[in-house]
Image (cartoon, rainbow, N blue to C red):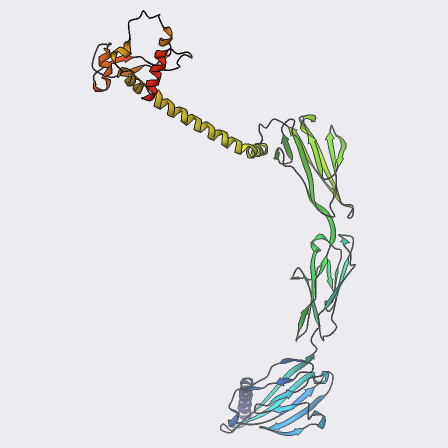
Length: 467
């Protein structure tokens, strides 16, 4: 092959070889791109190789380039042996670390900072191949940060929308320090009212508002360490906000309070404010206003009012010079017991009511028991008609000799049966339980005995109760 075709073929082969070499380089050697060291400590620039070191021959060099300075040769090596040090001053500053071409810096100082370059020639005898690898690592040398200290200006409480606050954070020791501000353990970001300096060591809040209240602290850090400051509180005078009138009396519907006639009512004017508000209560009648009292609480006696009257609470913050007001209507109407009044009274008298109901229940049960035991109609009849005939009827009387014995309340007792007769002898009545077909009407005295009963009546009642 001659001419342009041969030259094209050679170019393609070289391009393929370069690609292959690049792929091999990316796979067989690796070092970190950045290493952060601590001043006064050692640092190892470690090289990772992805091949068997005993199967290859290595030759290479380490160079340093300081910021703004030239590239300086540090050491040249062949396999495990140092060939040359660039100068005597590097003898105790850098040590070659075989077998993988690493470099040790035993003690870091500011002069050790910079970029470190590694040039490697790797020969693979079995493949008869020579691979070149170049790597660079950037080394920083930092001092750990000390505990930061924060300050607030002004140190006293500030007024919202009128004053600014400046926070500063400083560390005694530390290099390349970055600052971050936190409020209530949450990071603060820049906004229209929060401005930061370039390194975030200063924070300005302009103007201060209520939502800026909280605990502030500063976080200082660099590549090798971080510390947090103590906390400082930010106190702000603000308000009044969320003004509202509240009362534990009557019934509230929206901005209307309804109370019973003659009821003594208390209203409280509440708002979110620092310091606490001073309140003024105003009555509005016929488009005219009148200051009633000054203070957080208003006392109103409803019998002194008309059917409806409007009131207004005006809250004023003496420090912020801000004020707010809210109005409500008081209506006097009969609510019965009223919801809250009913609850209060029921709670107050519930023990007495429970005792009264218990006593009434026990009394009723006792009355029912004695009535059923002593005045059951059937039992009374049996007690009467089981007596001897002579005791039941007695000698014949005209019916007017002792009228008190006939006085009382009579109870009708119907005994079912098949007899058509409406009369029964005293002997038949004496055997009332054994006769199933008897149908008659019997009267007897069972209660309401006269206050001065005769001897016969007392005897009759005594036997009834004994039965």
